[in-house]
Image (cartoon, rainbow, N blue to C red):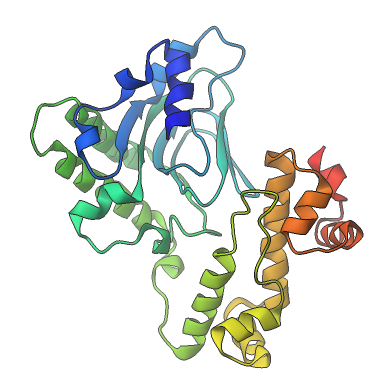
Length: 306
C-alpha cells in the first residue's frame, strides 16, 4: 500500500500523507478513490501516461474511459471506449493507457475494509475476483453513466465531514461489486451443488491456492494429479473423470495450464532466471521446464520473455 502512495505522490509532487483520506487511520482496513483525469493532468509532460495500478497489493475497481490495454495474468484485453475493471491482489495485472485522453475513477480497498459491513461476502469467492475469471467488462453508454455516477458519489463522500461516511462508502463499494456481478455471464454466477461439481470446485480452489509464486525460494507443494487426489481424499481416476465431465479437460491438463500461466507471468514480470522459475514451478531440471513450456506455447521460455 505504501508503494502505491509513494508512486502517486511522486507524480503529484505531494507528500504521501496528503493523499490519505481524512479519518481512514481510525478505520478497519483501507479505502481511497481517485479521479483518473486529475492524475493524468498532473503527470502530463512526462514521456508516457502513468500506470496507476500496482499488482498484488489490494483490491481495485476501476472505470476507465479512453483507449487502453489491460494485461490481466496472461490475458490481454484491448479497450476502445469505456470499461469496468476488477483487480485482486492474487492476480497481477497492468493498465496501459495508449494516450493522455483518459478519464474515469478508480477505488482501492483492502478486504478488511468491508468487514464492518458484515455482509458475509468473501471477495475471492466472487466470480469477478476469482482467479481464472474475466474481470474486464466493456460498457454501454448507459452502464458508463450509472457507474460514473456511483464513483462521483464516492469521490464526493470521501471529502465530506459525515461521521458515518465510511459505512456509506462500504455500501457504494458493494454496489459496484454487485454491478460487476450482473455483467457476468449467467453461467459464471450460478453453480450446481451436486457431488461432482463440488469436487471440481474444491480442486479448482486447491489449484489456485498454490499461486501466485512470489519469491524464487517458493516452490509448488502440489504438482501431480495424484497430489491433488490425495489432498481431496478421492481416487485419482475419480478426480480425472469428474474434471473431464465438468471442464472437458483432464486433471493433468488443468494443472499444466495453470503452471504455464504462472510461468508466463514470472517470465514477463520478474527478472528471475529460467532456472529459478523452473525450480519454483516444480521442475528439477531446466531442460524439463523448457520442453514443457515449448510444448504448451511453441516457444522457449527465453523466446517468450523477449
